[in-house]
Length: 199
Image (cartoon, helix red, strand yellow):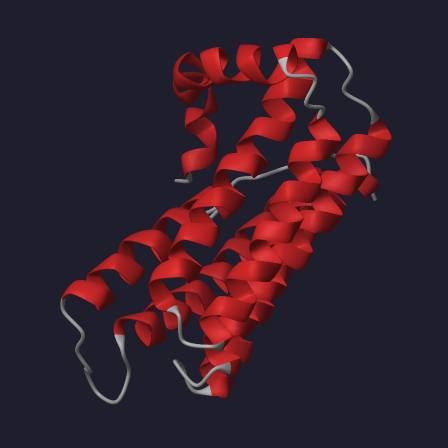
């Protein structure tokens, strides 16, 4: 289960913000690029061990990532180019944030690489389904919205009650979870797409 399926519930809360954004002349691409910038800043802040501000930057990334699609749908200007830009930026955001966490020494690098490969493979297979004619597929255990929420929650818990369990901090165990469930999600998506693809 992923949080992505609750977008219709979140829409009620985003609609007023979307209306304000449109009145201010803010475009979907503005929010996409703002999300890109926020993720890059988050990565740098985590690398520098400014954990609190890194969490704030992740929250800003999540907000802008939700707003770009919502504004595009409201303005009825969804396009293939915008969709392509959004997915490219999302993958860079994953790379910036996760790499920042382990490159700064908060997590051992093998754990970080395990997490990053799981996240990227799950995301790749979700969009590759469309390339082979199945249609975009986001099923599985761990989606992007889940990851962003978990980074914020675990980050706050780590700040309030720092601890180490079997050599790993809460962030370390979170990246283990990202890697494990990311690869399971990738396998789930692979199996679904494989069954749907015409031979």
